[in-house]
Length: 496
Image (cartoon, rainbow, N blue to C red; front, top):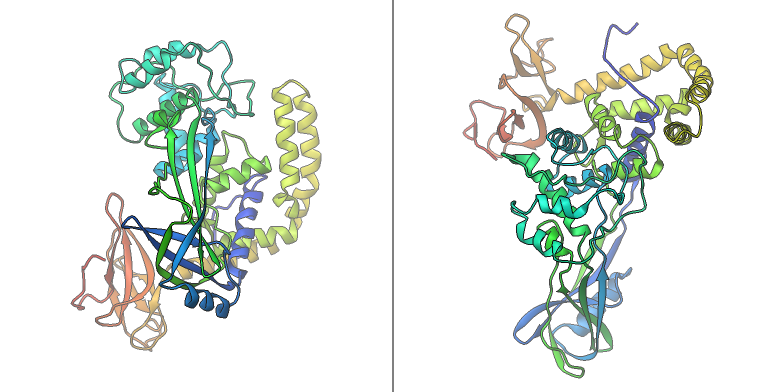
């Protein structure tokens, strides 16, 4: 009916996941920042400049913040109290697939699907256990000492010897279990010729396994109170005094050390800097590939084996882009249209209920035929309603697709007439070029040649030399670069 074709998909997991991203995008776009003020300060102690924090936290009124700044700037305060505390930090739990994917994203910025592919490759080489597991536990039948012994001749040798010297070895387990598969762990088979991303994932799994067998770490926290003209400032420090399991998990563990000089109550402390700084409240963060994975787990939609593929599908279909994830106009249209015509497809409750029933089948608690029959009966009216309204649904989504295509092909405004510059292809040569939208009706003849390989994106910037739009060129295997679209501009070809 529209003369346009594009493959789209939506399902019981794609729908709610895309809806999460849409809802977060609305929160971000409608957020109204509010100003507040903080007092930033620096104190001098034993010749060192150390940051101090105003004990009153954020301040809502500028006049109040400026008055504190005026009264405290350059003054000498008195150290009123020093307190020390010790924090015991438990070892991390063993990896399940979701934990591994989130941790690999944190330390390597690997997408969940990439981490799964690498882990499955390691499993097929017999270096790690089966990765598609939700368990954070190891059954007693798995011999931890035997696994460690197999790693003696690897780079982990000294750490392995330390663990094997202990009388008892018991990993710290999480609450999640999977009757089919244990937590992810090394098998004890020493890898040969492992390089690159696969070696990094293997290293992460091995060190996490050893860290789970380690002892508690202990961190000392120091907090001092400084009284300046009746206003309290805090000086904070901290250091790890017993590394415990952290020794096994380096370099992946975060250890922020701020060791303070000796402090005594009553000692004078000069503030070198006191400044009232205006800030603004921030909207909630957009989902990234790690946080949306966690949201899916919390909502109990998808499985350990399918969540990464669902995210990949949302990208491939053009519903989301970037990382953090931004919903596209097409993704918005999909959610808005379905929420109007078939809201059940976006329902977390329907998906969660079916996931629980599928798990019950796995545990032998219900019959598969019974669950399938219930699912068919639930879907029948939804599909019937969808079929009845498919023309209206298609027209609404088609408008969004066309809008997405136009926006993706718009590079900026024409320097001559101010209308849009878009990417076109020559009818005979097939080569792409940038031209004013007035080119085809003869009202404006501005055109520019474009690189014929790679993806071209608008940057929203203008060349400081000639005023023409700046574009970004992205080619596989090369760093993206930016250049002025005008071939006669002196800045042409300059990497930015």
